[in-house]
Length: 316
Image (cartoon, rainbow, N blue to C red; front, side, top):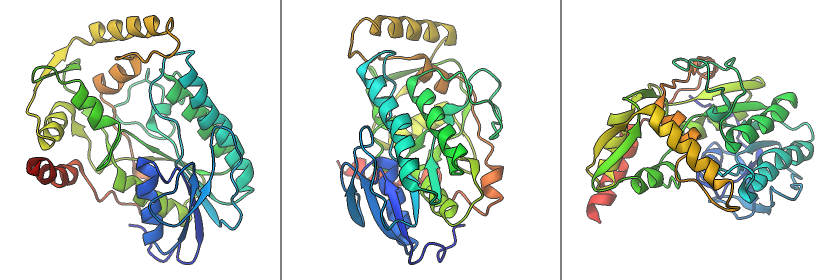
């Protein structure tokens, strides 16, 4: 559990506090007793706003005691696209500018399990798993950014598939893939680690209270069976679907073809990518022992999210 007195009276800069993860982190930091500086293009849910365009500017961190860096460009853009260039500008070049501005202040860096190499087995992934061979620009740029952070002595958190109320990514994508009451997933059922956004926020607060520098996996207490988790989430959103299975080689071949086609259209975003297939088609379980040894406990699970969402959807 996080120590509630650890940040009392401190001034914490939270970058990306207007985003999904950043807003939860900003509220958790405020609840811990800290004064929050929301650093980004827009203000966050609490605290004072300090404007920063991560793709182009150096942030003003005057007065901050420490930094929690949540700002990131996310997505799965086509190789060579303007979106990929923007992702690098934020996730790598912006990261370097932030670290320079931090000037030796403690930094908690929200990275991603997407940095891990997809080729070796991922049935239990510890922090020493290879960081290489990423399948998309997001994984590559997050890996490059966190490398700078680790070299600077930051605490780097690696969540996987962050979900929660207000999620603008995972659930909307699932809902958008349902056709005629059927959702096709690549390959047979697998086991996956997921990360409740509240667990990530708790980890950010705990890490800010003094974890040693280095990388830490962050995920829910137990992994989930993919097909059951998908059905439960979609049912909570008012959609009863059948889950079908597309052969994994066929799904990967289709993704490769769509990515190739997208390279010839400047702003195209392929509807299926190798990264998306990989994330859904293979067992990926994060070993969170290192974070737990620091006293962090993942208190939230997918069932909590489902119970919160269901009444809202059913009322609609």
